[in-house]
Image 1 (cartoon, rainbow over the protein chains, first blue to last red):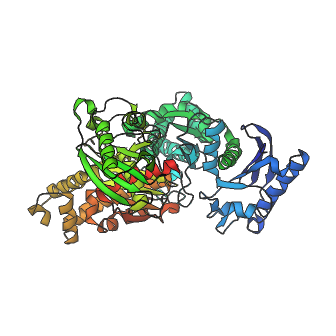
Image 2 (image 1 turned 90 degrees about the vertical axis):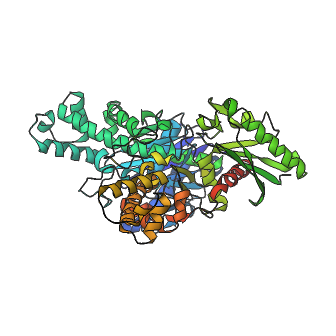
Image 3 (image 1 turned 135 degrees about the vertical axis):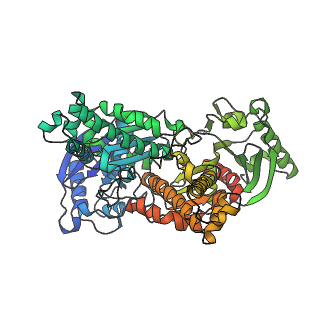
Length: 315
Length: 315
C-alpha cells in the first residue's frame, strides 16, 4: 500500500531530497552533493542510493513507496524527457524516468524544476487553494511555472513557463543572457533590479540612501521602505515591466493567482504595490481579478512539487 | 452504447449544429437562428428541440448519444459556467450544462467558442497531430485558444486564450475596443490591418495599388502578393506585432504549433513570411521550433471542437 513518496530537487551543487506521506506532510529532509563530473553520470545513481539508504534506515518497503518525483534544472517535457542541462553535465536528450528506473525499482516521474516548484507552491504553499496559478520566481533570473486546472504546463519541449524571456521593452540596447533584447528578466530579476538602479543613479546626482551601500535588490527595496525617492522610481520601473509581463501571461492562461517567490520576493508585500497598478493597466479586464500572493515554501518548493507530481501520477 | 455526439456552436445570429460519430466524422450539419430576445431565454431550449427533432428523424435513441457539446461566445470556465455574454442576451452567471439539462436528458459540456474552435482544429483540422498548440483567429478581432497536453486552457474565469489583448505597443495613443491601449488586436485583426494601412497611406504620397481600392485586409495582402511596396511595409508591421505577441505566448505555453485562422488567414501562407522572422526574433530559443500552419475547418471548427469536448469528457 502506498504510504510514502520521495520528492527530489536536483540543483547545480546540491540535490534536495524529501520523504513525504501521502497527505503532503514532509517526514524528513536532507541533501546530497550534485556530482556533475563525467557528464553527470553519478547524479541519478547517487539519488537512488540515497533513497535506498533512507528506506533501509526507516524500514520502508518498496511496495510502500508510491514513487519518486524529480525536478531538474532544464527543459523537461510531459513524459519526463530532458532536453539539455549544461549545469548538470547532461548533454544528451533522454528520459529521466527510464534512466532512473535502471537504478531503483520504483515508479519515477520528472519535471522542470521551476514548473515542479510551482506545483509545490500550489499544493502546500502560497498557492494553496488555487488550481489555475502562475508561479513567478524573481531570483538571479526570472523563472516561472504555469499551473492550469491543477496540472503543470510543460510545453512541447519543456520550455513552458519560461516567462523571464517575454519581450517587454522595445527600446533596450543591452542583450539578455538569452541573447534576445528587452526580456522581462532584464528588469525584474535581482540582477535586473540592480541594473535599473545603477542606470538611474548614474543618470544624475539626486541624493539617495542607495549611494552609500552595495547595490542589491534588497538594498533597493529596503530603500523603498525608507521612502527613498530614487529607489521608489526604480521600483516603479520594476513594477511596470513586471506588471506588463504578467498581464501578457494572464492573456494566455487567465490565472486565479500569481505566486511570487525567489530572492527579490523577500521584500514582501510591498512589491505588489508596484506591480499591481501596472498589471491592472495592461491586463485584459477579464483577468484583473487575479490575486498576488507570496510564495511560502522557499527552497523546499521543489521537493514538495516533485512529491505532488508522483501523487498526481498515481491518482 | 455511445454512437453519436452533437456539437453545437452558438453564434450571435445563428447556432451551428453538427451530428458526429465517435470517430470525429460529421454525419450531418445544420443551422438554426439564435433568438436573443428576452435575455436569450429561447437559445438553449431551441437547441434542445433541434437535437430532439434530429434524433427523431434519424431514429437515434437517447442512450446512443454520448452527449452534447456547446461552444458559446463568452468567458466559460472549466465547469461550463458562463460569465457574461452581452451578444446572446445572457446577463447572468450560470452553468450552461445545468441549464441545458433542464431541456434535454443528455450529458452536456460547454466551453468558450474560441477555445472550443481550437480543440476542433487540433482534433480534425490544421492542428491535427499536435497536443500543445495555440489557435490564433485573425478576424474582426484577434481571438485565441490554447491547447496544452490535448486539453483546452479555460483559465480562472474563462478568459484563457484572450490573446488579442496582449500589450504589444507602448507608443499607441488609440484605445482598443477593450479600453486598453496597444493591444495585439489593434494591429493584427482585419480591422487592425486596415488601420495600419490607412495610417501608412496617409503618411505620404508613395504610390500604392491600395489607393485605388476599398481598404480591407484582403486588399492589403493581395497588394503584397502583387509586390506593392507600401502594402509590404504594412505586412511587416503586422508581422512584427503578431510575431511579438506570439513569442510572448510561447514563453508561457511553449506550443508545438500556431494554427492560424479567421478572415485574415485567407491570405494564406504568405502571412507566415511576415510573422515568422519576428517570432524568431522575440521568442525564447527553446520555443523557436514552433510550426506555423493554417486552420482548415473554417466556420466548422466550433462544432468539431464541441464534439471533441464531449469525447474527452466520456473518456
